[in-house]
Image (cartoon, rainbow, N blue to C red; front, side, top):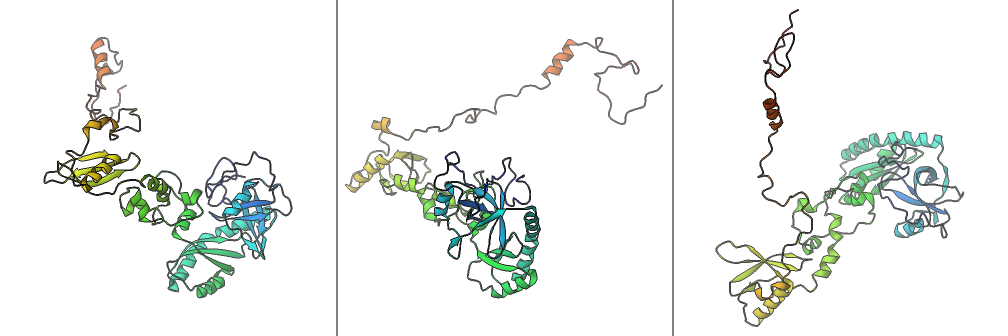
Length: 400
């Protein structure tokens, strides 16, 4: 079955059936024979980022990408097998497993054509239902946004995903929705990051959003993490597509904190040349940048962390070094500019555009010099040269 079909909703079209970018998990244990989980528990994926785990009570031989009918409350739902084998047990430890009366839900059977037809009819109602439910919530003056609607496989129940800053009393909304659509209503509140994961998109790094591809647990992100990494406090660059701080700010903050444990304080330095003010830090090159306080503008000077600690000790003892940089120990200075990349096409050259361009008509000129007017072919009808420029305007009819 092609993954580009509408039943694979929220899943991009791929060559291999069953693969999907929404919270996809690479099964690195697929070549290892199943020992602890002989297809007893299976991970089933539904619309967008919703996943759950079920027990294969009928011992069905399931493969990734197959559609199955699973237990729901009430009725049944249709989902796609996204993971099998021993890795399912590891995933169940990470995520919460939905229980019904204290037991894990079951897989009934592989989806029949009748089940898939009902599911497709239910999916076609989702967008229209979402638009109409937004109008109903606006008429009731509820401070909430309905971001998505997901119908159950048998069409008897629908899940309404909404976003709200404060607590919302939607009891009246549920009554109106049940009377309008004649289905059972379930309301689920999601955050802005979860909404971005359900919608999907491409981040400024050029890759798919982390909340859409692999991230399921969202930890809080603060501006302190950006300050540790010396990132400019620009809200437009720090915010992601969910209008919150980017989750990737937390990825490397621990490395920056460990590196800066023994860094000196960012204070002014007194030297014989004058007072130097702190400007910025290059953490992994262990370099502090300072500029001289004076009426005339001065450039930035980079010195090592060890040199900064030495000057601070001298200033506390009432001493001042003659100069900021110790030129007697240039060999130990780690401020030299190092290119972390290769200049492959000469992109670092400032004069790369100063070279004169070659004459494109050079070949035509040489051809004209070699050929004379007598050697050029003649037009039998009009008795003129082919290479002579023709006059602009409408072409004249030839005389017979």
